[in-house]
Image (cartoon, rainbow, N blue to C red; front, side, top):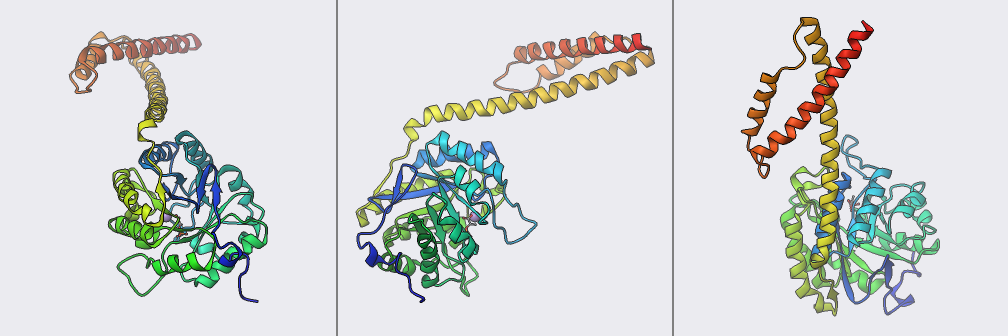
Length: 376
Ligand code: PEP
Ligand code: MN
């Protein structure tokens, strides 16, 4: 038998709703999932999470296990990326969506994310589909690059048959003869899927277009054609993204698209969540604190290195018969640095900071050299 029954619209003519954390997909809300193609660092995902939440995204996307065309491309941070994503989603108040590549990884990914994505390249990985039946998490199932709607629906049928009813389909472009875009966004498929199945349907304009200038019009078209939501790649520095930079939009572009979607969502009786921009104050504070903590760590490592080098220099001075303490050189260092533009730090502040650094470093140098002398 080659027909689906569990996912057939006839089974639930009113359509089904899928909850991801506290967010409901397939209901009155047009739900936008946004975030980078890949989680690259704790700071990167945290920053983007706040930015997209501020603009009205309801879900945070970000790949930890990446299916890359080339084995030489960045493969994702794996398990580390999972907890970074979870932490960022938690901080920004967004449930998370991330890809799972293998059946074996399902329990690990399910433990760390609110929804599991099956990538286009894995749509017919039947072992994975079966394993997702008992994942206990909703699934975002992407259409394969060259898959028919029948094949997509049968892939979804596998997941339902194995015990998981919470499936969202995702049209992400199919491969055609057209080379000027990465893939061809099949909007017919969205309208038709809404007739054929009760499952909610997302559109991913990013992977379909492959270029950032087409994301806004494609996103508008998806909302107009009746999709239940979107999956969009957003990066705070797209030109430095480790994957899919060309199709990643900036947070400012994302905010603009969200504004446009606000006007389109009512076409299908939907609402669009308001951004948390007004609530972002506290989130922003924790973001800044996080950065300051990282800077302090880096400063400390550099100070330790400075002290180690000073100890070495002390040994050489002793061999040469020079004195350890050299007030002229210290003054020269202080004057040179105080002249630098380190705004908002003023010359007096720079002098004060470095007087202390020099004093502590030369104390270490003196002690280490004294011990060395004793040993000799
Ligand atoms: C992705 O979402 O980053 C991804 C790899 O998508 P797709 O499987 O649609 O290519
Ligand atoms: Mn991607």
